[in-house]
Image 1 (tube, rainbow, N blue to C red):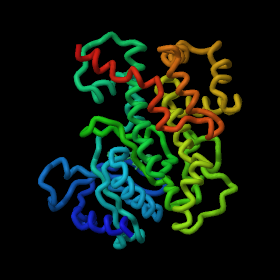
Image 2 (cartoon, protein in one colour):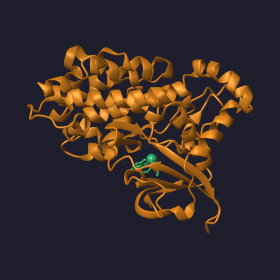
Image 3 (cartoon, helix red, strand yellow):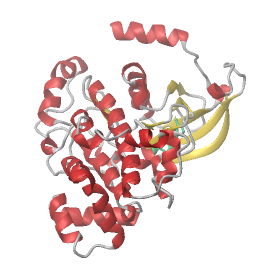
Length: 354
Ligand code: ADP
Ligand code: MG
């Protein structure tokens, strides 16, 4: 019961909130399972203005799982995700019971917002690296910025996966730029599964975003019996994890983000959907897709291949080891981080300072 004692002690020293503590601000998002607002505190419990800038999600019944995931993340891999403050059940609402979840307001922009700009990836450069000198714009420089974003994404993902959590909804809309720590963090654990303790063991496929979902329908083998009791799952899950590699579902989605960063044409919804159709026709073989796409490629598409081909093609190599049909053939987040693609990362920061 250590975990529960710890959780209790931590709770005791952390601020707790209730409904009337918040003044609702701008609506930030609305999905099928909840509404998200920027909020501030009514009666200041904190001294600093920064701690007063919060995000509230009013969630349906799935909010219980999301609170559980966020509590686990803040204890096990706090830097991977948005800074979670508190979650509680709010019963007084006319709509019935709602779960309220509170985070620090990390920043204005998701990776999706940033990717919509014509300036991308240059609009991210100063955010990550501070003031940059006016270096010539070009593929090398874009590649360095994209490398940095990919490294931060994989680092956050490795934290989640090492904790036993599969996110299952990795997409640019669920990656937020934290203005305080100047890194990208993952948000929205609403579809996440914690395989070590069997929480949300049965995949909720209907929650998955088809644009970023890997081809496998089930992240765990369908041979795996349905949700065992929590203690049994806790004992079994490291083994099941090894057998089924459920983390590779997130790797596939992250590979699609990599693709979108390299190819501006794939950043729109229609572009991505069209790409997905083409890839499916190639049996999810990226090399085969390239063979069909490159000969009749627009200059925009050709430029993306050129970027991935830099430094002997290590970017392309990394991409093709993430976007693969079989989960087992996809690289893990930890192995990806050790990939030569990231060796040169940081050189931009150096060249900027010279
Ligand atoms: P949904 O279930 O609606 O997708 P999310 O958790 O993804 O809920 O949040 C919706 C949007 O709210 C995000 O895309 C992002 O723009 C914003 N948001 C969520 N959490 C934060 C945060 N901690 N800081 C700043 N913005 C956030
Ligand atoms: Mg979301």
